[in-house]
Length: 298
Image (cartoon, rainbow, N blue to C red; front, side, top):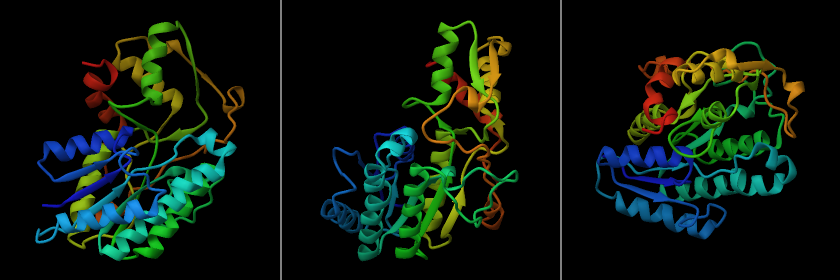
């Protein structure tokens, strides 16, 4: 059994992951920002040392899953220093505390470490080239983890997440479907919609492997396949039993944003085969499985 410390436990993925651990009977310390601010180095060191003591004598080593992050992509363009304080310096606090306490670490990262100029899925070892402040700060966080914990950490990159908790593109589409006859959605950005339940399950699997020293480095964890935001919106309407033709495609130029969005955010899943695991299921299957709770609130 693994003992877990989860930072950012009040977020969309944090709540999903902590709920999964509770359902599995795994010992977990859910550290919301109110409980543990990762920018406070002393507090982080104390929390990691505490989880190491809790796990003493257990067959599985303790694992820290750092989900604390500033994820406001446009806001990071305005306040890059504020994003860096959490996404890089805060990550450094966690990584160094794990190094000192000999604790393993999972760091969540993002497709935004790439600029989106490719037209082929990005492998795990592709050179990173972030084009936004958010991407730059997340890339800095990746580097500090890999430097501090080269053999005892995993970077998990993901993107386009949605789930039962918090706001997401999918929840926005559900709301707009109820209020508008027609919805305009960007059709020239491509990525991989990822259900947080599937992602949480995969993080758990990797944590168990990491606890057994069976994996390290960078992994990509998204539901497989790809689509555009327009394609995802049509799928949401279809799952709701609504006419997908109510969704109208537009270009990114018709909906400008402060931070440029990667036009191509598809991540390759090559390392799963090396670990004897299948890639995560196709995004469309995941959306159908998520529909009873995520789309309708039942």
